[in-house]
Image (cartoon, rainbow, N blue to C red; front, side, top):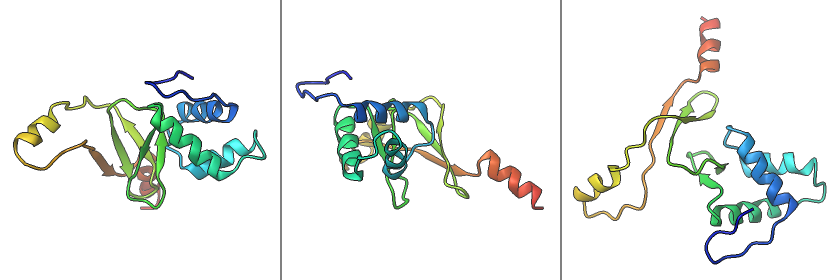
Length: 138
C-alpha cells in the first residue's frame, strides 16, 4: 500500500484485504458488510477496527465515503470523479459512466457568494432488476 503525502501508515493484512474487497465490488458496501466479509478471514476482527481502517484508507485517498441519505454510509475504492444511479426500489447504487462536468463548481462560484467545497450529482430511478420485476407483476 503506497504512502501518500507525509503520513506513513503501517500496512496490515486486514487493511489490505479491505481495500481488495472494495476494489473487487461495485456494490458500494457498508462498513457492516465489510466487517461480515472480513470476519470470515479474520475471526477476531472488531467492527471498530473496520471503521478505523476505513478512516485511514480515506485519509490516504484510496477510499471514498459516500452518504446517500440512508442510515449507513457507503464506501468505494473508485475515487475518480463520477456519478451514481440509485434505484428507488431496492437501493442499489451503480457507478454511472458519464463525462464529468469539471467546470460546474467554477460556474456555480461565479453565480453565488456561497463557499463551495464539492458537488455531487445523483440520478434516481429504477434499476433493471426492479424494472423487470414490476413488469412481471403487471
